[in-house]
Length: 350
Image 1 (tube, one colour):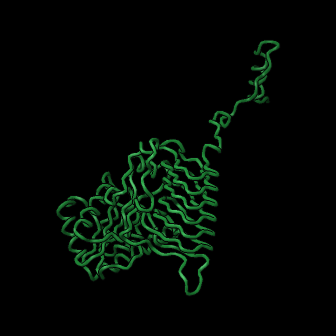
Image 2 (cartoon, one colour):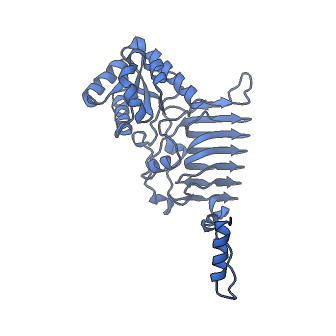
Image 3 (cartoon, helix red, strand yellow):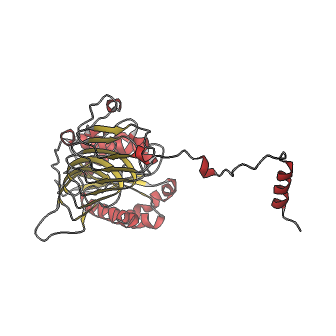
């Protein structure tokens, strides 16, 4: 019995005009556009303002090294970014699907969003951060952290392209691999820190084309208090279930609560199973089980005297037709918050 493919190749060879040689084979990977690493690198720059506009990086890896006194803006999503041996620089880094790694840098200020953040052998960095996992510092001192606070029109789509949720931000949950007894290698920036004083909006003609805002109420990432000391012993947990308007509803609720003087402590977006809901929502779980299959839930923790009553009033007034989990009382709210975020941390491996 003969091989069909060998017969077909023989037929093709016989049908080729005599004297015509067979051309080189073409494979799918040969058709890909060639990438020049130099297009995704800033190296050896001094006293410059430079960047990449939306669409110019498009998920590639990026390298920044040996720069001094530079302002560098990457207004696009990327795969990973490494920053080595930079001094007195300012960075804005759009959403990074993987890791951002600073090594041997000092006196730098930055705003960035990523899946993983790591600092090694650095001194005096001030970082406004969105990080999906626990940020890590190693052999570094005087590292200060604040919450990411930035907006431009393309940024929401770039977060999606990088596979990052705007609600998963562990910016203040720092792990120090090399702690020193009696010393603190990291701290939180003042809560009233003005981001423009650290990472100013670019002023060059090319980069001004990106319509940037650093106002907290426009930030693509909800500005949270993280692990700062809470102002009140009363918190409230709200869980929104997946639907067409879940993100918009979460943003609206945050705006309303913050506008009434309450504080957003933390947010989380995570998938839940029926057994998770039983553990977190307990006797109310049955009400929410049919909603779990639609997608991940979004959880918000608010803090402030009267937070539970404030949440109920706003939700009843604005979201009366939308099913949400809301803490019933001040007495049960602390347990609600602990149950949900303990589950979420385990689920996400934090």
